[in-house]
Amino acid sequence: MGLTLISTHTASSDATLDITSGIDSTYNEYQFYFVNIHGSEDDKQFHFQVNAAGESGFNETITSTAFYAFHEESGTSFGEYTLGYRTNADQAQGTAYQPAIGYNMGYDNDQSASGILTLYDPSSTTYLKHFTSEGSVAVYNNIAANLFTAGYINTTSAIDEISFKFNSGNIDAGTIYMYGVS
Image (cartoon, rainbow, N blue to C red; front, side):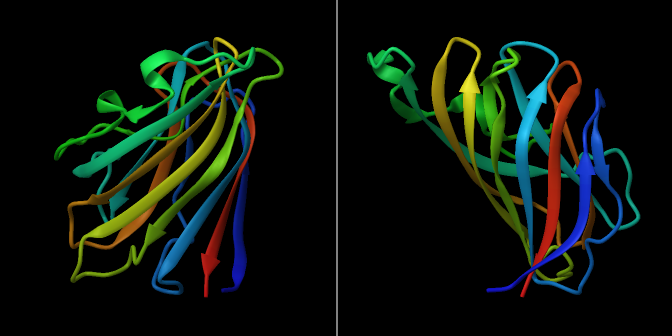
């Protein structure tokens, strides 16, 4: 596997980070690396959504599933949520932004999220577009967590744009690197 850096996007109090070029038929797989994504508000989720070629609005139909693993900073258990399915982080043919690498993220200066989102064969005009995401996050109430998400974008149209944002507030800081995988 070889990675080719296509673009770098650095947040500075941005409402969204939209990548509107570089996703094309050059690669069958694209990876988005998130490094120290930091929001402006506490207890928020980091999301993504895509546009099919020629479309606007970042509202493609998504079906997804998600689970989370938690561990408290104090070393004690977080009860029934130590490992579990996240019903509020999935979609069933929804058009909302999809929670990706971080859920319940903190905004303290020492809290951020990092992870990878992989988009498979976005230029195909035959098949649906699958994705996987894994992220590590410092949760607002001092819990370390990993969010694992997978699903598909229910369109056979090519995907050529992607948008990232929090469900509320700005992306205060952090960098997104987009790579093509060969």
